[in-house]
Amino acid sequence: MHFFINRGENQLMGDSTAENLVVIVGILGLLMVVQFLWTLIVQMKLTKLRKRYTQMMNETGVDGLERILLDIQERMDSQQDLLDFQQVDIKAINEGLRNVKGHIGIHRYNTFAEGSDMSFSVAIINELQDGIVFSGIQNRENMYVYAKPLQRGESTYVLTDEEKTAITLAVQQV
Image (cartoon, rainbow, N blue to C red):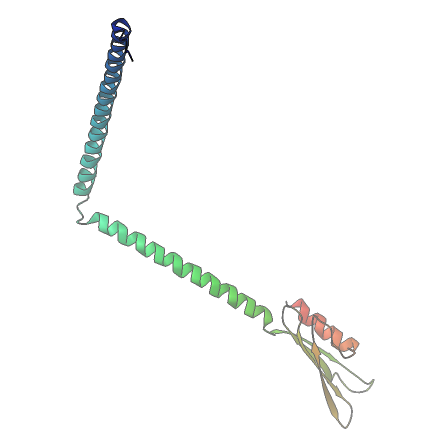
């Protein structure tokens, strides 16, 4: 076996590799210079920012301004938590108030043609018109009282016109 080495081709390849190496080293050198300049610029900005921060902290006349600001932020966060908790409570209270039977309608009337308005119907309802209606009917010798449950302004028992009037008066207060 014989190996032939052509010195002319190797010389050409060597020159090309050396040129490529010079270009690569040149590019890397340029990148290093750019990186160095960038680092200098960032360092100058950081120094300027640090100087302004120190000046601001010294001019306030308050020791530990940063700690004070952090304390204020913590207090604001706790106040927000308290506000959120109170809003939940207020919502629950409002929901509970809707169920309170505090709207009252009273209708007095004369059941019989004789006498005065001694009979009555009283409706006690909440905003959803749930509650109860009482009716008291008086004649010469006795008085009879009836109670009927209400759901959404209606009852499972037949409502008289007077009871419906009492319910309407109570609804007007809602």
